[in-house]
Structure formats: structure tokens, C-alpha cells
Image (cartoon, rainbow, N blue to C red; front, side, top):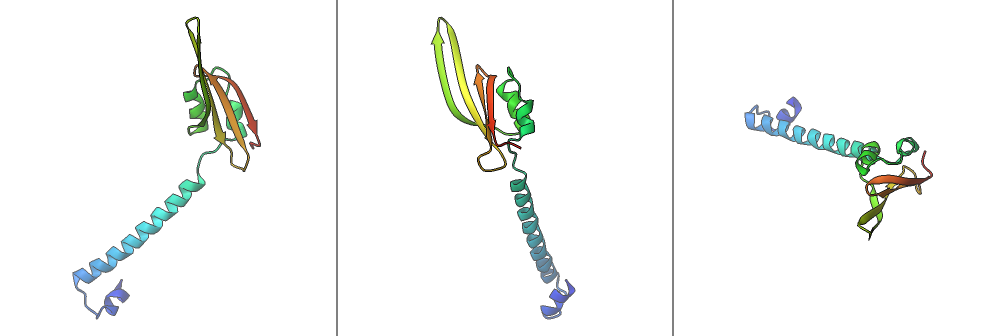
Length: 121
């Protein structure tokens, strides 16, 4: 800070000191923001074999989402009604950490009825 004030003509005026401090703060805040963004990108939740193995039949979508840590992508949905009974089928997919790694879970009336995975570790 002293070097900046000396380079500015040796004046110790508060406005120049404030300006120098403000510039340093903006730079530090920007660097901090970039570091946080990079961290968040690296911490993106993914499907893992451990999470997959914790999912059991009859769990609700909310329970599966709690295990996974994020929403799945809906791949298919179908509704059928007969004799006063409505069946709502949905298949959700979660991507794994590696290319091609993923898992899918089939829900019937918001309950797990089947699951499959490929390449999860």
C-alpha cells in the first residue's frame, strides 16, 4: 500500500489510499469468487455404486433424491387407468462420474420397482 501511495506522487490523501485498498479488495473478492466456482464445479454430485446400492424397492422418489443428492433426469413417463386404478410409471436417470457411467430407477406410483446401472464405481 505504501508503494502505491508513493507511486501516486507521495501523497497520503485518504482518497488515493481508499482507491488503492478498494482495488485490492475487488481483486481479492474476484479471485475468491473464481476459486469458489471452481470448487463447486468439482463437487458436482454424481451417481456412485454406493448410492446405487442404498436404493431399495418401495422407496419414494424423494427418498432416492435424498440419497443421490440431486434430481434425476426423467427419461420416460406413462400413465394407465383401468377399473378405477391408475398406474403412473416414470424412469429417471442419474449420470456417473465417468463417461458412459449411469444408473436408472423405475418408479411406479412414486415407489421404486426396479433399478439398473452401468459403469458406476
